[in-house]
Image (cartoon, rainbow, N blue to C red; front, side, top):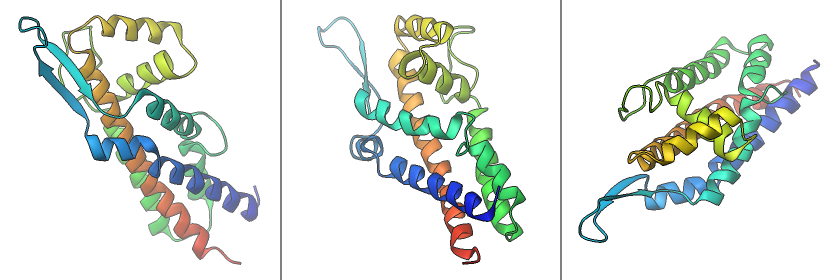
Length: 190
């Protein structure tokens, strides 16, 4: 890949990251917050309501997030390889790889809420991928069935709120990687 092609890939990465940062999802998450609330609408039954971005905003965000996850030229993994092989300062390479590692550590970490054994998810990545591929993209049958089973549980809205928080963290990490890509582009020979 030529330097111009590498820089073009970084430019696409930055543009896609800007879409995430300026998304209606993030605006709604910032304005309305993310979480769950408990109410008793009929005076007897507890209802667990989710607060967070609207379904359409989540879908729109995920359309762009998929560019960073799928094995294509602008995926995080492929851009990491490009950055690692470029003739740029090691500090920039380290910034990108650190942001990538922090995202992976977060995704592989335990969710902020506990679930009954076998009913929930062991990692944030599992929640992310189950909702992404079970509800919003590709309709993976196994993941779709899992989301349907989760919907029957009283903690479903807690899971959705965790998913929303995972998306916010994903955007934060991609924005950090994008900042590094922008610095590399600015420092590149003209």
